[in-house]
Image 1: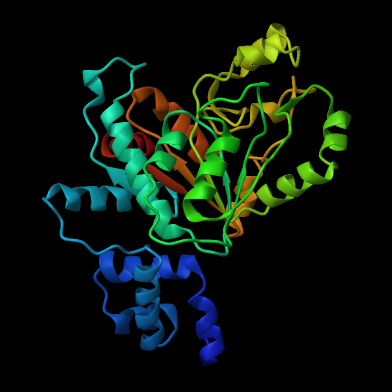
Image 2: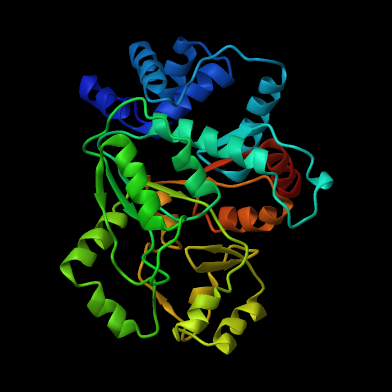
Length: 347
């Protein structure tokens, strides 16, 4: 049994621990325990439980609203079941649609909009002035969540940086640096550019470039991020890598023998969550951005929350499963049909 906490200072520390706040919120709102019972279970005072519930509401961990219909209760229960089954910190769901109605390669854009909008609301409640946020790029989910942001407050001390540098000489709508810039602008926060190529063919050159002060500042910042926001891709073969001479088509084809299913910032994973970049020696390229495979340890230590925003298409299912098996995400924002399929396949 955990040691009983002594003194106000110990309980004050608990109230800054988001895992504790979420645990208290689930015990109270989901499992229906009284504050007295929770205090006994957690070996703390009833006053600490009350304060934790208040903190959970203030930080958006708990959002109390009138449910529009019975479906909301189903979504809540499905979210809880999936969270427990997959060992995630949180699962946030929107209403989806039958994926059998579309081809395997299509995406339901109205569901994507709902996912992006819900992600923007969730992230708005999650962020604090003390956070460092690292964001990936993407024209669909990442650009969508930024587009739907309606900040409820300014966060002038928030720091925002991209997780990946520039892939091509001319940036695009979904570029990570632009997504990071727009997110920072929305909150009146501090934005830090990562002015670095994403790919290097030579490891020593990469190490040298990462020592350039401007690049080192951004690289250090992303590696201390408290919140990472990302989506994913199912196609890992970027033709610009070949066109720019970073790698050859033959080198990229090596990935095929490992049966890749997901690309997150050009870190490629197989269906079991193994990082293929680490399995190929030497790798076809070296990445300058955030070490996504290393997020597993940061999540386990409680240093970083990694939010995955994706859904509305059957083609994303193997990719989401692989990311979960790799233990590189802690919060999933998706639709209920995707969640149902993930839950069925995990049992």
